[in-house]
Structure formats: C-alpha cells, structure tokens
Image (cartoon, rainbow, N blue to C red; front, side, top):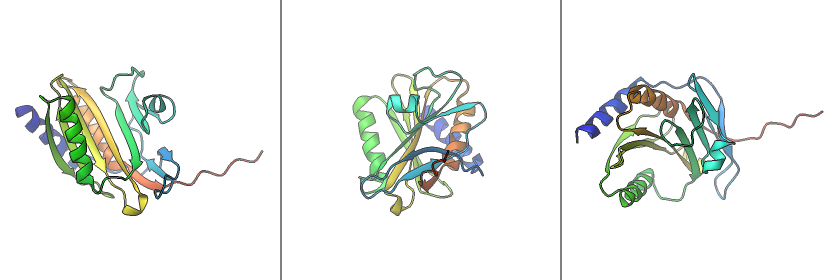
Length: 191
C-alpha cells in the first residue's frame, strides 16, 4: 500500500512540473487505417536519450522507443510509445481492459490509476506494481475523435531503482509534450 501511495505522489508531482515542448519533432507516424487518417506523434527528446521508431521499436512491435545509453532489449528504463486505431468505446475501457490483462498475468500485482492533465488531450495513467518487483507506469491518451486513434506511453522500473524520480520526471515531460498531428509525408526530393 505504501509503495502505491509513493508512486501516486511522485507521479502527481512530476506531472505538475512537466511542461510542453516547443519542438515539432515527429517521433513516429502511421498510415491511414480504416477510418483513422494517417497520424504523427511529435515530441522533443530529453537530453541524453535516443529516439528510435524504425530499428528497435519495429523489432519489438511498438511505434517508438526512447532510451539512454546502449539498447539492452530489457524493458526497464525505456519509454515506449504505442499508437493504434480506436476500437474500444472509451479511454476508461482501454484502462479497464489493460488492468484486467495485467492482473490475469500477475494475480498478486497491484494497480492504481489517476488522471493526467495533458494540455491537448484527455489522458489517464495506471501504475502497476508487479510481484516480480518490476513496476510499470502507463499513460493512455486520446487525441480528438476525428483522429481515430489512441496512444500510450509506458515505462518499467525495478521497484528499488535509485534513479526512479529522475526517470519519472523525464517520462512525464515526454507524455505532457506529446502532440498528435495528421500526417502528411514530406515531399520527395527531386534530383
């Protein structure tokens, strides 16, 4: 219980400090899918982090990853962006489905959730405390209804990670600075 309270206090404090980035850096984009138009997610990269949409991200089946140092293939300390066409009726349904799936895999795990006040889109966060001593923070967001998509940012930590606060601060800055855009491929260069 105490670990859950600490998680929530840290994440709320970090979310309050996070500010949107003025950068228009497209991190990931996707093609039209059914009723969902082509999309792009833009966000600046924190100093010292590496952006990847096309090598490691594709290998693990996600839209993009941000990581520090060398790629290890381990989920801890990696920011993961997932984008998918909206299928469930609400953001709350996404959280409920994800929480149910998590508890099916780890019946001894604990979950909690809280709202994130993103400046451009509704977002909800979940904190998962695993019986394996690996904790996860996951933020689901929903751009406007016309986008036809939902997205999530997630990050895993060993529950005793001494850099947790610094990592959470960077994570929430990325979440809060993420911006949805309709995607238009850049013009091809002649020549």
